[in-house]
Length: 433
Image (cartoon, rainbow, N blue to C red; front, side, top):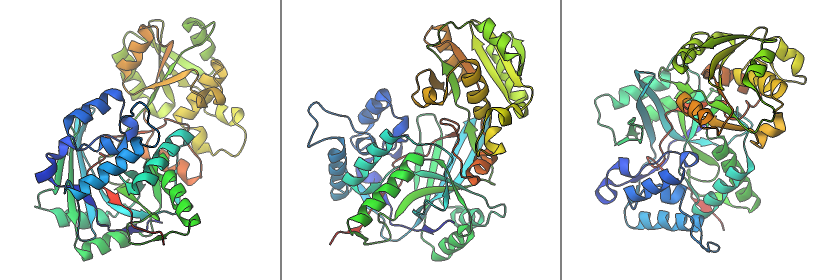
């Protein structure tokens, strides 16, 4: 169930910090060395200094985490960041272009009670990222990135109340991200509107769309605090986490596929592979990447995959999805077995190419691509041997698998665009006496 709480968010003061677009960043796990450098150069107050700071030679007692805490405290002292005086909800709209269509995704930012037994997750997590985020949380006692939450409300009660509240009102924050997408935030302090939103989602299940590592880290930190005998000193504390909630029944929800690249196969030949694949797949050849993309998209209801290797463009369409019941034993639901990514991993990667679950987890033979052109280029360069093109997972598939208490294979979903870090922040108040 969704127990949400208004909070006194911390926001950049534009008079002291500058334009919001120069201060925000993509989520920490989407920031590579080049992006990190660009954010550092964009503004001395860019949020990257807190969420993914630059390591220095000899870092030990002082490190990226202690420096993050120093930046946070300094920016609060200097008025770069200002904490809102009244508890608020924050309406968050994202205006973006996808597949040639202009879309708007609408949600709101709030604190959510940490109740892991009631929240549905769909993705496996890794130890390394959770340890990194835990060290940052210990040092700063703050929430910076979002947990991207989904809920279902066909009546749109919360959405309607929030839309009415911001009608004709200029956004509190406006920012443009690195991909040209527009991000708008409105601060809501009206207690009646907040109450309507709280009641509207109170009986709704919550599904983590993005931010599994951040959610589990928050739960781990809460348990550490409880073991130490610490207590929440304000609504903004360790027993809640900043979340952004989106109604799955609202338009504007886009999930991009995450394509697979295969390398380090011995005795691999594309013609031999396609011949073997014909046992369980209908194989169709194309003259170009564009033709292959169109063919795969047109048949997305039929468990179809694009294939590129050795100059061959092809598609593989599963003949009988019942093979998944024969190949996969154990208590996996039919919904999980019929995910495209489950079929790819089980029937193609494991059965035909010998890449088992352990190899996948250790990423010995697999890398990932978001753009088909990127995948084809990697194969043409000789870096990779095969590019597999996937159709996107649907929001309903995410919900159904999560309802079974199951986790999708890693890299099954890519919700687009990402929620910007730095629009609204939360600082914990903790009684350590």
